Length: 350
Image (cartoon, rainbow, N blue to C red):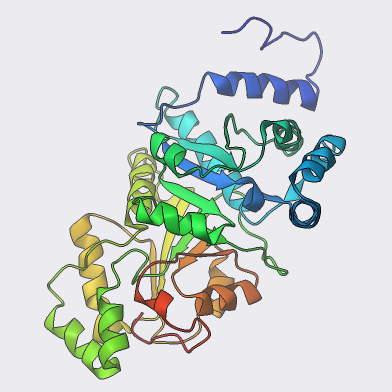
């Protein structure tokens, strides 16, 4: 261990010295990428950077860099991904208590197009908010996608929809996050993640039937294929790694006190099209803690009760509806729904 990182104290530790010690210690607890669940988060969704973005857009890169350096001791405010990242760290703390030597942990990588000069302000902000983020990827304007693959990223969250599409095209689970004016308070002790079904956990096969042939044909197709597994969607792998971590708590008798809880929130109907979704999850060996089949009803009110740290959906109609009620929602730009007007009524089959 690096000399000087952990120091003894004659009296009680100050919060700053304790954080410094924990931060140094975390350097030696960083898991290897092949063992970790790697979450890559853009600085624009982890923190509020609207003012800085406006400087960049209106005055250019040189003035933007000058502004960042002048304000590098002023921490950014939390952004939409902030509660999610804090919840990941809560899960890590519980895992380290149960499995001190295990590297099966969430590993958070901060990804930014920023020049390295801006890194000082980002580090100051991370320290200010007591976040444990040791891995940075500052690309100076270049695409981060190649680096995401090198990190073996399990999930990428960004404000840049084009980069999210690029990540999805490379087989990386990804979603676009948005800042909501109203944000519901979420749990500090349990990570809650909600998923749509079709074109998120599953492929868009069934959605294509609905778009092309209508609701009756969709129901007929699902009944005829209820024993045929749906193909995987872009976020199936992320649910898979969440389930793997959940089982580590179950193995210690903590199923009822697990700090990870997952939800399926789908506009599918239970009796007419839900059985295929549930059979697919079971065949994959994946457990969903709660499944809500809404038969076309709005998702926002249900999500308001769940209070997830993040909700993934492929239709902006649902993302916006969730955000209006205070849920942090992320758009997965994948599948046939991207070719249709996002403002149209949501499909009952989804």
